[in-house]
Image (cartoon, rainbow, N blue to C red; front, side, top):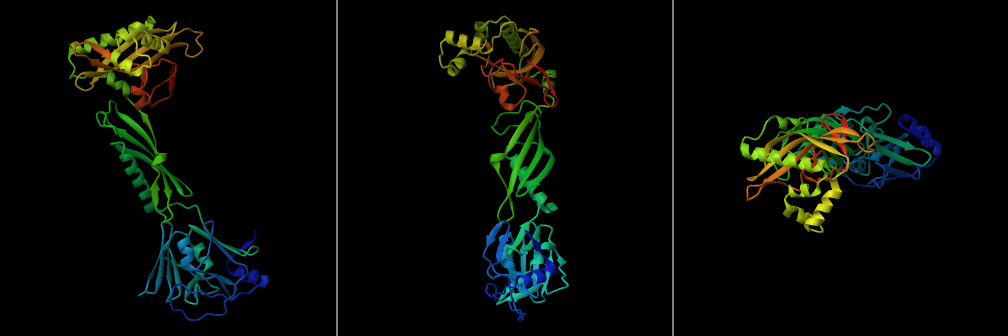
Length: 420
């Protein structure tokens, strides 16, 4: 495809040897009559990838192409207005600002006067304000061209660096989106754009004790790695696409909970809870499924089981996470926080050793787990079934499942460590 622009248009247009008189009225603005107006046949106008039907056909004067300004500007997403007192057409978008001074026949693109040595920049056609096609080449946001062979005018959007004010609006929109879900300090904001899409990444530091979006209290200092996507609308503004939000959780210093126990829980209860966790680890080591079940709240296990008899539950627990030839040892158990009026959160460091020929996780791994212990009306402490197998990897993992199936042990905030 061969294209031409500027003063070279004249030679190519004349070579085509096609002339058509054109005049259509849209915007009643008085301009003196101009020289003969001619244009190629056929002529198509394509703006931002879409063919448009402008209110006035393109014209040629002395070899220079003029197009209907209002039609092209609106197709590019500009907000177009006419100041009757000043006789100025103003087109404003996030990408650029163009002012056509009809009275003085001048054009300003982003505040800079557009100077063209070969012809007037502004003319008229039966009342329509026509501007040189080259007008849109004066902004870094757009490219304008004419394909002689197909008789098509093109005005295209360029990939350009967004202005500081637009970037600020995008970042503020992303921060507002993140703030709906996480109350914390937002930092490390980064913006990347591709066409009509913007991606913002950020970190959110949520201190321990701050309530989460679902109303629970945050147990650990938490870093949320957030990613928010926005898209550019037809009117050139930017909107968040909430369906593409992504949030990943990191606990940068979760082991610090082992350094201080919750003073609200009495010494006797703490001792009973530590004994409970120790018995749980011992039952795992001895492959004692009944012993594990006896340490958990049976009523909750029954709610979770399809076959809620004690025998069925023991079978399910045994087949789920009792493994032969695995040795377990409790390194440490710390009652670090209360859970309601009759519960406690327990951090446990457990060493697990598998045979050297184990295909999944040979050798010794250190498992960092979180348990929830509940004190019954009889004063006895039992483990919640949905705890005890949770690794400090994500919010959901803290309360989901008790499977001992091998997964990587993650030292959050650092690299992957030993496998389970």
